[in-house]
Length: 357
Image (tube, rainbow, N blue to C red):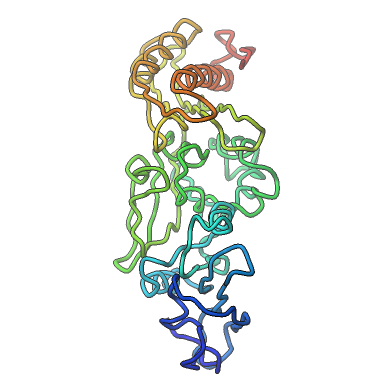
């Protein structure tokens, strides 16, 4: 990536975007914030600034760059080495930086890359650009583009609150990989594909393989999440969760997506859980228990018992493993009741008035 030609950035004594300014551990006084926008200098292609922070503000000092293309972002990550981090909406990253739990030497801000903001539906696949905000998704309730994908905008009411949804992005949540996050669970539940762009080009990773642990993914340090592709979910789909306070990350979340035949028998089933492991996980025993059974409370209870036998959730100050297991079962049954009431044949079998409790 071309660099700024201004005096500040070319001065060897200036802690700008060169080697000295990009080191997280550098000591020294706090310099002024400087930089320039595209067009500043004949070779300018991206907004860059030293933005070096010291002890007078919350985050540790870091360099800042705002590319205008994904290729520029990838180049910046490569040049920044292991200390560079992508900035999307910043709702999680900046909080960690303010607590100095995370000290990146460089932030690569994707806010000025228009190619990462899109929602398109083609051939039954919904393609969501990584920088699409959660508020944009929430506004899609009832819109034609989201036809058949209503689970996604409907679930946004569970994500934080309005200011967070206005800034938080789909790709940012996926890349942050919190095991309790709704977007991570939805990606696993619906068997989405995560598209990554790096120096070698674009590659696709199934969501089930993308999340490798708490805040850990299959993405390389010089790769950017550019798009998430969701196949059309089954007709009956819902997400239920329990949080200590509305808008907080849930203690446990459960998502279901299944289909029924004309007789009310389950012919396909997908179940995913959040908050019970170091990543969102599928529940194969529950899926197997649902298949071939007539959808009713007895089947839901049976599937919940099968799911519980497979769980070994962590414990913390909010919930011990036993409570989390019981809570997972309760959220699973709630999601099933919500989902079945939405199926086209629900009214034929008395499911349209099911109480989602």
